[in-house]
Length: 237
Ligand SMILES: [Zn+2]
Image (tube, rainbow, N blue to C red; front, side):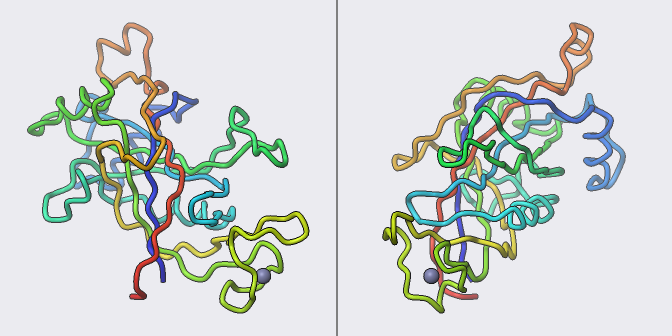
């Protein structure tokens, strides 16, 4: 079993579900019913079906669907500090096509996991968190999950049963590893910009308060973190 980590960036905003739909999803996790004016909501791109050049891995559609399912209810932490309590919680995720980012080989839209998270306005530091995220101070998210197996892109065999090497070129085709089985999503963390990743938050948002809604803004304007996958091998668990 392997653990993968990705770091991300906020790019822009896309069409969002309605406020009612988002609140219904939040209230499936909350102990007591919450209303829109009680929460901050943001979203992020967690990962895509693009090949990650640095580790030679690529998520299948099934893996993206599994990540959507498993991330709901998981924590957003600060700096992977598992000793502290979560700062926010993922409550919804879906796979979206992004025609604005076509696959360089096929020209088809790339597919992404978009995940929404929330935190409570009336908690200590809640506004600071929102301000820092929206103001570009908290620029990245890093997320960890585990996967099992892996499939060779050249011969379709389980990775350990063939001799093809990721990154090598075979008859013009570069070998990589398909990830089909995501076992677990562990957590997402707000992190400082990683020196080794070209990631940044570029987007804008609107929050959910009454004043903004009256001015015509809605939950549709959300932060999006985008996370190019970065995989790290860890001992089996
Ligand atoms: Zn192979």
